[in-house]
Image 1: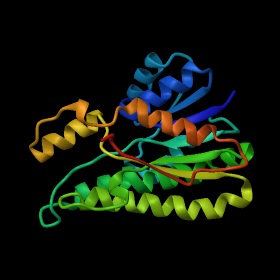
Image 2: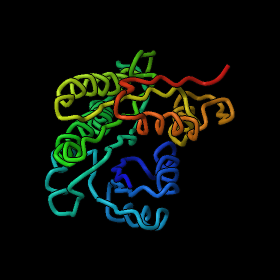
Image 3: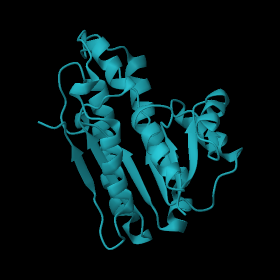
Image 4: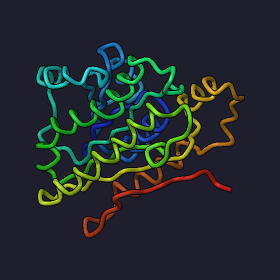
Length: 229
């Protein structure tokens, strides 16, 4: 039975992934940004363990995790949580730059650092849910895309560093997916939102499970997912 630590299990891709992993009998450790959020996740995913720590405050992650019980071995750490705020560089306040870079990049980097001993002990893997914006940047997407480009760089460096420890590192780059985040993006873009026009989160999860379940004689460093024609 595998043990997975997930961020972002409260909605969208993270929620769908947690549901699938739990249904097949895997153990879950779910990161929540607060104790109240952790209690909600415990109700939604009976039997899962929760850890309260806020990715928006990366400098506080070490102390938050030190006060809670974590497994000695983790088969995977899966980074799904993210935030997005659109706007041109000319109008983007520093607070929104900082929030996106912290949650989307610095938080995952620090969480990975803290959990690496447990992942190494299991010769497990780290999976980053990136974005199409991590490969190309469009107008009004500078802050979010910069955080996701940085996340790709983090994964690329980490993959080379952790190979001697038997740890696999992968990035998944979904295109626009029918999630609450996508609905928020459409609100910011001033466009009508039709979830049927975008990737179903379950399809992204199926791809992620392929990455996670691949036999150990191979790895999928990067996987790009696009909406069907």
